[in-house]
Length: 411
Ligand code: PHE
Image 1: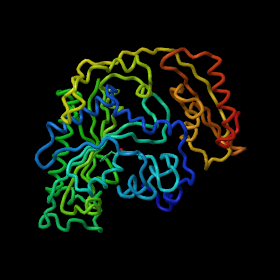
Image 2 (image 1 turned 45 degrees about the vertical axis):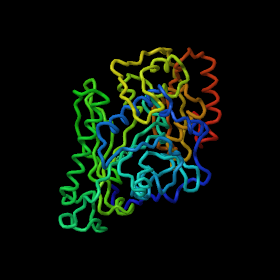
Image 3 (image 1 turned 180 degrees about the horizontal axis):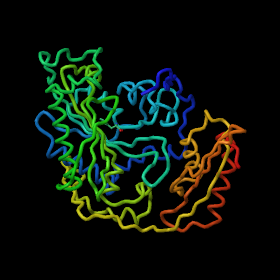
């Protein structure tokens, strides 16, 4: 919510002309880890697909799988059609990778919802790589994988009970009458039951699950699912009833639908006890060999078989020590500096040897009216010891390029 008098930023007018996609990111496009047999992300994907194919499909809803949509999509597909307001921070070039023009790297698999709804698909799962500019640590990486699920309920909108199928004047995010309609409640209940059964079939039958109210521009009501894992409640997915305006725009004004989106890395890290998200990208066989042979399914058959992952736990092979170096600088142009730009710069400059970057100090010199940031960069390799000399060199190169790149002054 914005304060009265506060100017809203129209991010649709700030799309960078020449894009903001670094080489490190470009190299990830097309890797399609979720399609590589025996990759943990592929195993998780198939387990979920198996459940939808065998337990959650019925005559009217045979779940179809789409695993190879290109991650390059339009602003319209990723944001506009999903009713993101123009001042939604997700649209900003600090959060999203733009090619320039109106093309971007999808930030979520929801970018394909409208297209598939228009083509009258009634039940589908879309899996793909998604991209977000983000901080660097063991659980955040600017590329990860999501699976989107949608199920359409035909002729669910009863004009007699529901009033007009779609009414511009209703605020569907807030309207309690809408949320109480039996057609909406039915869809909500089916959604929750389906996802609870799915997550239990993947993680374990006695898993504790709870639902938290949430907000997404493209669903109402919206929820997040949390699961109790090793004493902690962890958020695993977002979901909701598809906003009536989207149904209307897709020519489905008499129907309702539910949708969900789940992050695959998160789930794989929990299930297999994988401690660092960078491992999904490694070529090291000491990682990949641990997942070989678990998937016994016949890849030529269109029917999946369930994969037994009981007891599959990743055994850490790298406890190579980490080391850290600090870098401090004055920010010359406050309005142009964004932490994500710095994180990205570090990744671009030093690659995957950077395990984590923390802001360890920040202060403003009142007299000079300047702010200083100090960042601690943690270096660690997954497969070898790093030498002092190579880290010094990385840090030296980083410092050299930093001033030109980000209009800051090293201290
Ligand atoms: N796209 C949302 C995200 O990335 C997840 C979501 C999908 C929520 C579908 C609701 C419905 O966070």
